[in-house]
Image (tube, rainbow, N blue to C red; front, side):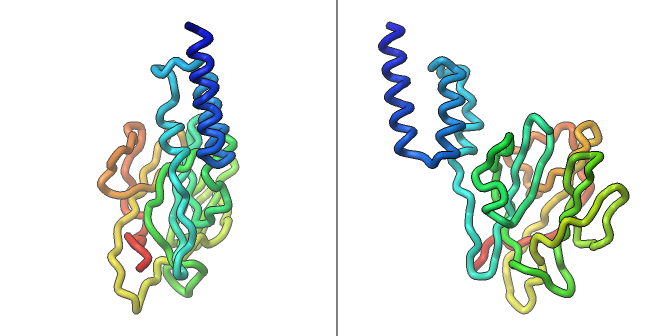
Length: 194
């Protein structure tokens, strides 16, 4: 019986090898091998999120991508799909929060700051770094005029225990933010890029 289970597991690994990209294979292999083919212990969240496709820039818009590193307890936003891709080094791509305009503008820039002491990032429309943070740069702009686009609020949550800021959509669908407190709306982004 064990040989049959191992054989089926090996076939699944071969199937995944030809069906997914290299990064996804690593996560799938790790989940399958760690579980010894016991389906009750497969990390289903890692498999589900690792198969999400990271959107690419379209028509001057860049996707606002959110990643999470469970071992560090940190969230990370970027508009560069090549910065973390589908994830790696503990980072897992979670979702696309919306779209920003590529580049910078006189007003409406979204700034990314980093704190080495907290080990995390903070995002703001204000170019002045908060205490303990240094400016990393502009990840995009929310200056949409004269285009008329449907906008949505990106809410900012903070966890004092994790020293982590998490940015999300107001509906909190599928979010586990029990240790986070709502700070308010950080900025707006576009729902689509059309």
